[in-house]
Length: 231
Image (tube, rainbow, N blue to C red):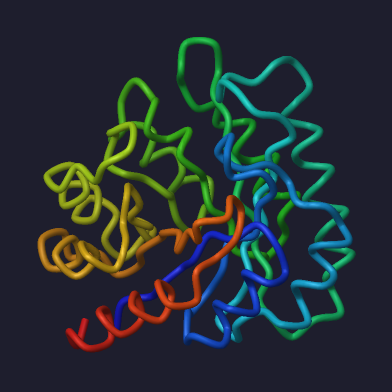
C-alpha cells in the first residue's frame, strides 16, 4: 500500500488529514515560501490530532536558497534536539525534515552525521534541497551512508515529477532508503505517478482556496484515488 503524506501548516490541516485517512503529515509554517519551522505551539497542538502514522516536522529556519550560511547546520541540529525532547511524551511517531547544501550545491557528509545524531532514533528526511544537488546518485549514496530514512524529491525538476529519474532513484535506493515522491501531485494525477514510478510513498498538498488552509474534499479524493486503485 502506498503511504500518503500530506503537507499542512496548521493544526486544522493536521486534523483534516487524520479525519480523511491520510497516513502521515508534514507540518510546516508558511508554505508560500516552501515551508519554515512551525512554532512550538503549533507542534504541541498538532500532536493531539495527528494521524497514527506520524508527523514529520520541517526544520528550516529561513526562506530562500538551500545553500547554508555558516552555523546554520548547528542551528538546525539544535532545533531537532529541542523538539525531540519536547515531543518525547507522545505515542505518535515524530520525525524531522531537514536539508541544506554547500556553496557548490553538494551535500556535506559531516553535516549529515551531525543531523542524524541530533535526530536520535527519530525518522529523518532530507528535503527538496536534494533536487538542486550536482549529482543525485552521489548525494543519494551519501544520505544512505548517513542513515537517513527517506529523501523528498521530484527527481530533480523544479515543480513536476521527473518519472524517469524517480524510477532510477527508487531502484538505486531499494531496501536502503525510501524515495518520497513529490512534484505537483494532486488527486487527478497521483495514481498515474504511482503506477509509472513504483512510488511506495507520496507527498502532496490539498490546498484550499484560502491560502494556507487544507481542503478536506481534496484530501478525501486523494485517499479515495490511491486506496481505490489498490496501490
